[in-house]
Amino acid sequence: MSMSDEKIPYKIYLEENELPKQWYNVRADMKKKPAPLLNPATGKPCTLEDLSRVFCEELAKQELDEDTPYIDIPKEIQDFYKMFRPSPLVRAYFLEKKLGTPAKIYYKFEGNNTSGSHKLNSAIAQAYYAKKQGLKGVTTETGAGQWGTALSMACSYFDLDCNVYMVKVSFEQKPFRREVMRTYGAKVTPSPSTTTEVGRKILEEFPGTGGSLGCAISEAVEAATTKEGYRYVLGSVLAQVLLHQSIIGLEAKAAMDKYNIKPDIIIGCAGGGSNLGGLISPFMGEKLRGEADYRFIAVEPASCPSLTRGTYAYDFCDTGKVCPLQKMYTLGSGFMPSPNHAGGLRYHGMSATLSELYDQGLMEATSVEQTAVFAAAEMFARVEGILPAPESSHAIRVAIDEALKCKETGEEKTILFGLTGTGYFDMYAYGAYNDGKMSDYIPTDEEIAKSIANLPKIEG
Ligand SMILES: *Cc1c(COP(=O)(O)O)cnc(C)c1O
Image (cartoon, rainbow, N blue to C red; front, side):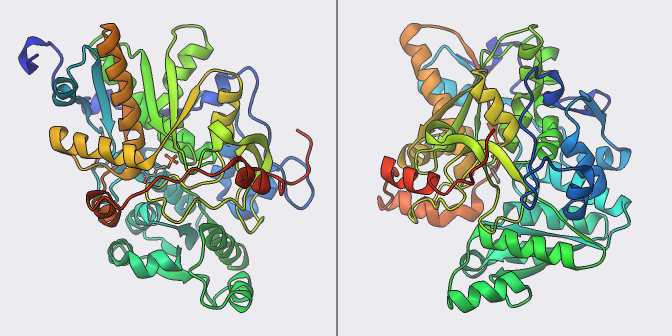
């Protein structure tokens, strides 16, 4: 196979006038909608007023809007997108050749910006609506730092104050991301901290703790709701984030339509579900409306398997139990992946929209072990040149496995996967893999059952 015997270019870009001007809200085409968010204080569905206390008002409206299929992307956001969009849709000719597969593999690469991931697509939208509301700033949490980095870039563009609560162990062990955030003007606080009541309480109870994402969320929410002119923003899981991330799928679909390419299988890694939801949304819309059919595959780590081994029920979105309750596939809000888990995607639950689509059998899910994920990452880096994020490599693993199945059957399937970002800040994890020191850990049924036993008792 050579690159020249195909009419398809190695990279398909869209022209500026072909870029999407609206996001697509897949909930509008779902006959059975995701279950409503519940107010943790009352147990009743969240109202606009409830959500607007925590989130920017326009974002709260987007969160509750399950009927409008297309929502205009404000001009200012379209302009910002031009700095790093369209993202390329790449035909993985070199990977196909390496695998000797008749399958045609495409990937949509979202790592081409300083934050190194797709998260900037939603960060800029959230910062825009905060600015438009006249707020002084936003607060958020970050673990490994991808979301905090993206948000700090977005806030500096709109001259907004950006307060990031960063899990203390990451703050200390990942100084590079911390400094990228500070370079963009963010204030980065190691969590737990003494700046919030919940932080002080946790420090008293567990002096010397390295912190956790759940704790950082609780601090960020407290900081937003107790300070005049601030709101809390979140980088995944919520319907508003899937909406903003639909730019990935809209661009991918427009690029494929341009060359009459129809994917058979669409694959994405799934942490909270935002990149996967964004990638599949327009294709899923066609499936829901009966216009086309596709196979969708969510890929999660075997060490944090919310879709494949979780329970579909109402649960807390955070360990501190301050955020709205969401019906989703969950391992329980107290679930902690094993400490040797290095591949990201550590969230205990899954987007409510994706959970509902999965429950209706419209999407498949599979889980993969981290050594197999890093083996796929290494092969991809060596033949395609891009050093992928460990998260993204979950999708690479399953794309390779599907392409190898085609090799056996001789089928020329077209595979599309989301390459969400680059892995330059994950070199400790790559180091463990290179040294042969990486191991796989799969939680036992008992461990999962123990965590599930603490789900809130809510019918739904
Ligand atoms: C955050 C992140 C993910 C996972 O988040 P989703 O919301 O599930 O998309 C995947 N890849 C990269 C590079 C990330 O930074």
